Structure formats: structure tokens, C-alpha cells
Image 1: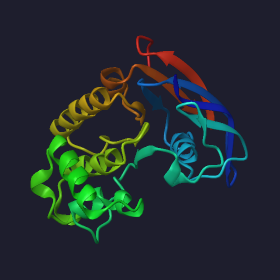
Image 2 (image 1 turned 60 degrees about the vertical axis):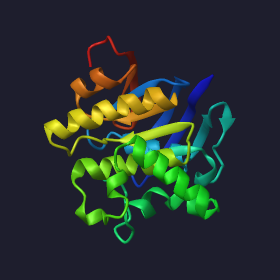
Image 3 (image 1 turned 135 degrees about the vertical axis):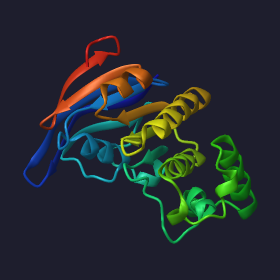
Image 4 (image 1 turned 45 degrees about the vertical axis):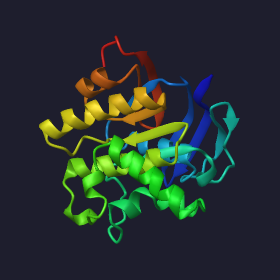
Amino acid sequence: MIGLELSGVTIRAGDFVVDAATLSVPAGQYFILMGHTGAGKTLLMKAVCGLQEIVSGRIAIAGRDVTAMDPCRRAIGYVPQDGGLFPHLNVFGNIGFALDLQGLGRREIIERVEEMAEGLGVSSLLGRRVGRLSGGERQKVALARALTRRPRLLLLDEPISALDEATRENISGLLKRVHEQYALTTIHICHNPAEAQQLGDRVGVMSGGRLMADELRSAEI
């Protein structure tokens, strides 16, 4: 099965254009998307999420056409570069936010939040405010929030680029474990070749709004 398929996806944002991006990522693959700042990587991922309108093309997740589908129905877990946590909520509220929107009962929300928090090692933080978290803790909480929805596709926008070296190693190991444990199709945006080599099964490169290459991990990147 194909986990993510982009067919001629074109996006316009002001004068910038992502031009006819085409990509096929098998289910369960860890795909790295590289490119310089401003290449269009984040814009493309927002289009996959349904947060950015596309001009033309088709987006399919796990074989289902989601091009015109509402973001909340796309079965995507998305971790933006800054984590996107809500400062007015504590860690529990952040992790369970999407579940509350889905209308799940309180007991099920508690069970799923506690289960995910334990799996990612943040159970002791559930009552803490976001402003009191370290960079690594914020990324763990953001990842827990994304995974609590039980997505088919996980999108990570530079999840470790702003962390110190020791924390990067810790979060990299966590990402690898989570990917394998949940058998997720994962798209991970990064700039660092070493990070791509460590985590990715395959690497794509964007430049100037074009998906220029789609290489195996063994290729030079």
C-alpha cells in the first residue's frame, strides 16, 4: 500500500509556486524531505495536512483521496517546527486537545492521554504548563499530541533542529522507536544530512518549489 501519494500538486503562495510535486511513499516508510530554507517543504506539508489550498493535483493517504477533505478527517499527526503547543493549556490539555474536538468521552480521553504520555516518558509532566517545559519536553509533548489521534501518516517539520546535541540524540532515538512501534508512514523535514542518514529510509530534495530528487538513503545527500 502507498502511505502518501502526491500527483502533480501545485501550490501558490504569493509569488512563490510549488510546481507539480509528485511523490509516492510506501506505507511504513520513513521519508526525509530536505532542501534550503524557502524551498517549499513546509508549504507542501501544510497542503498534505489540508492547511494550505492547492491549485491543482491530487493528495492520497493510505489509498484514500483526501484532496478536498477537511484537515481533521485526514488521519494525520502533524508536528510543526515550533511544536505548536497551546500556552494556555497544560500538558494533559495539549495532548488530549484533538480527542476532545473529536467528541470522545472523558474517560477515553484520560486513558489515551495517559497511555501515550507513559509511552513517550512525559507522564510526570501532565499537570505542567507549556511555558515550564524544556525544548526536548516540548517536542515529546507535541509528538504525543500527534500520536494520540492514532494517525496513518506522521508529518514532522524539523522536529529536532532547535535542540542541543544531547537532546537531539534523545529525540532522534525516540522518533525511530515511535516510527517502528506504530508502523507509521513518516515524512520528516530536515536540513541536516547526518540526521537524514540516521533516520530516513529514503530522501527527497526540494529546491525553488520543485521536488528535484527522490533518492535512496545510500545516495550522497
